[in-house]
Image (cartoon, rainbow, N blue to C red; front, top):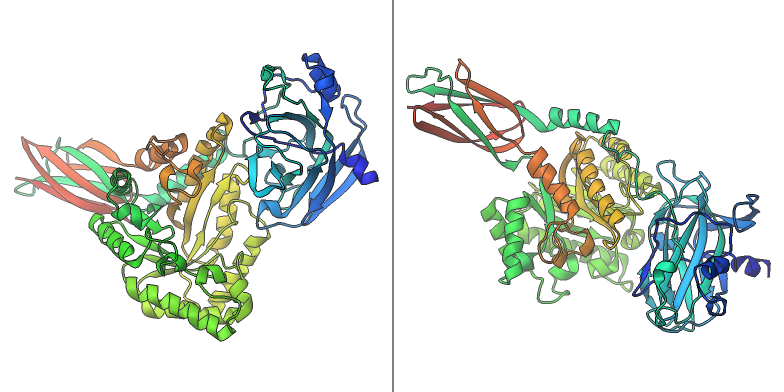
Length: 619
């Protein structure tokens, strides 16, 4: 009974529908109860009905209760919530409240809760929470996500309101607190049902709002953060080289005062994206625009789904198939754009088209047949293969057939495609570093010790507002993996947000910029690929650089400003008395032209390690 009484106190959050949101503007923290606050705003006390809820935990979560001795707060009891272990997904650790009263469609729900960091979470950031509500009538439908909120060191009230989009006799709140170990405190939870206030024309601006600084920040976001200077120096050292242009006349004599244009055409560093064969080969209007953007904005691609086992073997319908992949590769070859393959082995029965009824040797031989078919079909046409995807996050098959058996998959890849670089690929390493990082390192060490031809280490890099990792921490993680002496690949970058909230849009733009700077300035990273670029063909549309109408979003602009602006070399020079002009340029492909005495000369060159000197003769 004690827990049930306390549960009436505690957390509700983020209810959603036509109106939703946490709003942070002018409300001072108040010791008054929620009912008193609403009455002061003009709400009729008869319309304010308290919502009761039963509390429970899910997953590796510990809750303890304590007394709060702060007279300026409207509560005297609170709970300390601790995630005891890192989890693969955020909802694998949660605190939950089951509402005890039904709610009708259109009813206005309002809640206030107080949150504070207990300063015992991940030292790289404040604790982060994710709030949502579901109906038991449709557990697969989250009515809408709440705000992803880092929790500050001081008690702050958080206000939530929503007009319920559907009736429910049995609804509940899920408060997701997983991914990594963290600890924070919750108090003063009050939930009320304001009935049909919204339909009755009540001005929702009368509802209280919270005054707090924008919590969607990260260390190193500041324009003058010291790491930026370090990154700039690293980029100059590892991504740029000296280019000298010598201009001579027909007799080989230097031509001083010649006008020289240095025009970059393509980066040596791969800036790529995930693509679909259907779009690269289709004949719809958006397909043509899709191909144009791929050609102009990226110099490497990875097939998002086409080379996975189920679509390759015809399980995903007419938009997938071997013929489309081969046709897409033909088009990419014409553009001079290399492609990487994703993925040969993913250790679940669903991904490999095996099943639990098979014997271990049958599973292994089936997997090998699936791998062999793709390798023999596209051998020599890809620059890189993800041989083993999610080796530590998904282990259904490896647990069954044994890890030693996976060594044969690597050997088979090396035998059938000897020129293609072979990579391992894992998620949940850079976005929310936790114990999976150590498992990944141990698996790579084991594979190398066993002689597996692992030639590159991949990092999926799917971020959200809850999983922003500071740039300097990204460096630290990459440093750990660089010790293997292998190239590091950013294989699947994106950042998902709720673009209705300007602060999330700003965070997405800032972090996209800073993540790019962090990885481009790390000497072990040798390629970067975004996981798609257009909202019309993206697993998380709000993460795409372009919206569905092909408008470039702010974080897409951040990408373009770096890759084709700050990191792009176009210069006009004049030769000195020795007929020479020089600069430091980003490594890549260039067109060089020189003009003197009404005549011109030109050359196509590649600026690589050690720099390049090119001589142009104007006759």
